[in-house]
Length: 367
Image 1 (spheres, one colour):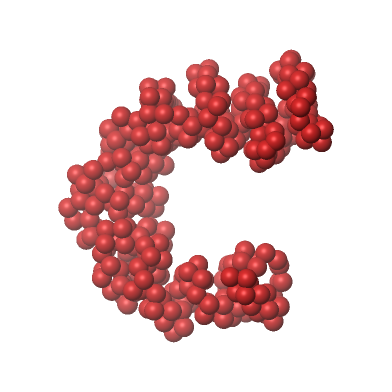
Image 2: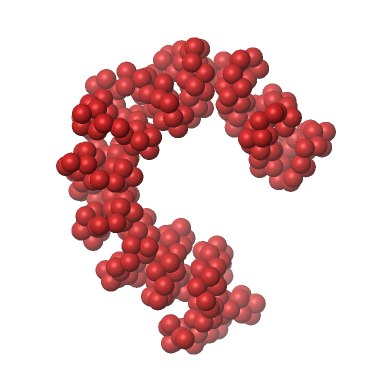
């Protein structure tokens, strides 16, 4: 059941000057996109996304652009995302055309994301109608695309979507995305407005962690009246993801002393969040404190947060702590330590501590 009647013929012609093996490989992918079942077509899209730029990257991009007309929305959406990740701006018009004729949310959302990545501020009018789409994933993709394009309406649309469900978007994920866009495209006055909304539980009685985190990130970027106090309060948020975002915001706002003070807070969750903020904000004055926390903090979670930070900062003393974590009683910490080690040395030595020590020594020699 051919989907694009001239595809294979066109591909063979376009690859006439390519090396035979590469041409054969691309021809096989083209054949799969024409005749393969849905899983095979999606797998072909994934392989084309990673196709080398030389010598046949342009031909791979053309196949992906043609896949925007596939009869399955999942394939169309995957093709759009692949074009965006490849930065295939030469096929921007194909993405625009596909967005104009698309009706399935499963393809609409990735097409909007692709247009946000590949397009220009002038593409805003193509995206604006989708902010009102019935599907929340499409609305979220639309506001994020407006933010990516720095479209003139991005900040105004974001403000409208953030307000509570009685006057704004009922989807919290959409409102969280709008907060992120406002953080990138708004002003300090918008930061002040977000701080007031976050404190006003009559406007938004129970914002979820994603919305709280997105608003904290926006406040960290924008500042505004009361920004430091608001972010300091969020260090005590019950969700660690929100607390770390707030700590990072404090670093962005230059509140180094507040962040350093939080490293000694009585509440372990606040100390752990402050470690994340020091790491993300590259607050060097806090590095010795983090090293101390990794060695001596009474909370296992804080010790591991500090150890992970030292590891990411490539401080050699973290090696001993990560290797020690391989013998922890918490399976989650064992898995996390194992992941860090595999990621660094490029091989899996399981729980053999001596082998890991030797591998790390070789890694440091190469550094």
